Length: 154
Length: 154
DNA sequence: ATATATAAGATATTTTTAGTCTTATATCGA
DNA sequence: TCGATATAAGACTAAAAATATCTTATATAT
Picture 1 (spheres, rainbow over the protein chains, first blue to last red):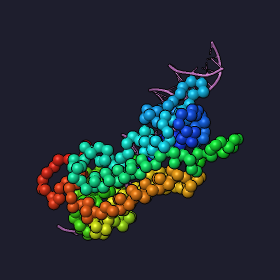
Picture 2 (cartoon, rainbow over the protein chains, first blue to last red):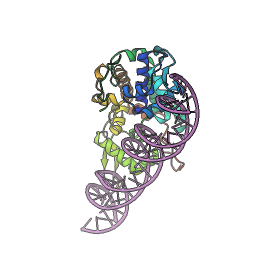
Picture 3 (cartoon, chains in turn green, red, purple, cyan):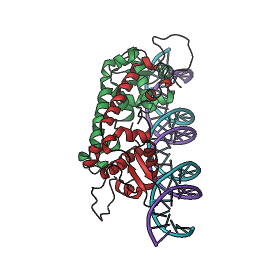
Picture 4 (cartoon, chains in turn cyan, brown, purple, blue):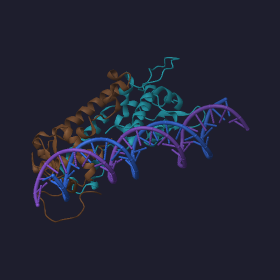
């Protein structure tokens, strides 16, 4: 009952890009270092974000990632679900056919309600807001040159 | 981001007991068959429910499990958290020290809110209500003698 | 052309989940 | 009191998912 690390990493990635604003190209390496995400893992996450239309990937020398939309138009929910798929708190929410009585089941109704509530809350949060304030796991921005300590893990 | 099967099984177990009411002894075997849970797995889950003060285990011949409280006093949240521990949707919710800036972090605030909402919703649901209506994964009650088909899986 | 950067998928490792097995203990009833 | 039956408790195994890395290929700037 917990977000995967990949989901968390996706949020950090978009958060970092959002601080640069829509359209600015940022290298994978910079993002990886600044958000404390393993570079190759970030690559996989970025591909999912790209498929979801949230970022664009530029290959080649001086390549990197850029936001396709304005940060205010990107929600926490969109980023999370781009990575882990649609949220479903219990199996019966995502696959009603897994239970044989699902539309009548009282427990099922609770899960549906909780699931809907959760998704709504995550949808209300946009990255214009999320990016500008202090954050747990990103180094300060604009860049404070030359500091080297590890970022936000343990 | 999904309830474990152990959690789901715990709900089914309490649900079945709730239909018998507080204090009625029901054998592990009956519960296992009626809720489609592997008997040895149910034993482990029952121990967790017992530690949480939700059920009582009676050993020996003709042993089994019984509810210690009235079904109306048992919430979905209590049962789930007895099995999987306190719900925390993201690592930073359960272990704020895992991030170095957690009280100021905007993302953290969202997670806290979502987490609290989810727990509140699950706390509103009591087993007096949950047990009496139709359910996905339990055979009908009172017992319809002699039917043998598998129960509620796939 | 070459150096640099990401793409894409194969592979490996670790952790968690799920389930089973074994030995011990408790209780009923003959 | 003894044997049958039921659960306790924890060790053990298997399967699945999460996490991370590696390798080969491709794209782009200079």
